[in-house]
Amino acid sequence: GENVEQHPSTLSVQEGDSAVIKCTYSDSASNYFPWYKQELGKGPQLIIDIRSNVGEKKDQRIAVTLNKTAKHFSLHITETQPEDSAVYFCAASSSRQLTFGSGTQLTVLP
Amino acid sequence: KAGVTQTPRYLIKTRGQQVTLSCSPISGHRSVSWYQQTPGQGLQFLFEYFSETQRNKGNFPGRFSGRQFSNSRSEMNVSTLELGDSALYLCASSHAGPPAYEQYFGPGTRLTVT
Image (cartoon, rainbow over all chains, first blue to last red; front, side, top):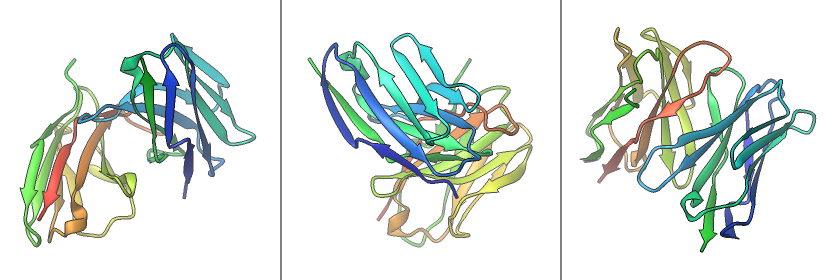
């Protein structure tokens, strides 16, 4: 089955700096890669996603890149703000099932 | 549009008991997936239902079961509870069909087994 590895597990950045979270996947048939943000006491919130026919996607301060050859994808957050502090999960899907990475605790320091 | 709702939000049960959790998907969504979230194992897929049929199942014992009703609402049941079943149970809904569509999560049900 699919295996998704996510790094780093914790990340601290100064407000205004950029943050990058990286994931690798094992199943070459995976074709959908969402990113979720989970705040304390809440369910994961879909923040951006990318499909395998696209190399990069951007939504305001958030961008995701996908390298199918290397089987890795990354989340980039620019101009970080304190409200970006949360746990971020990457996921990969080859059918209808999402396999999640282990999560990254992002802390934005004021 | 209302989001995914889950009831109850918190639940405390004793070992050996059974529990039923409920999920109402976003209006118009026909697929409901269930996930278990624990600090040690992270987010793990339990099963997915579409049009009252289980389409996909994760690697969990038969004590974990589910169903979906004609209005797309879904329930999951855990029988003979064990301490290790303590977790946040999340439900996610999506439109339908392969490949995977965007899944939107509810707030979860926090189950504590004592």
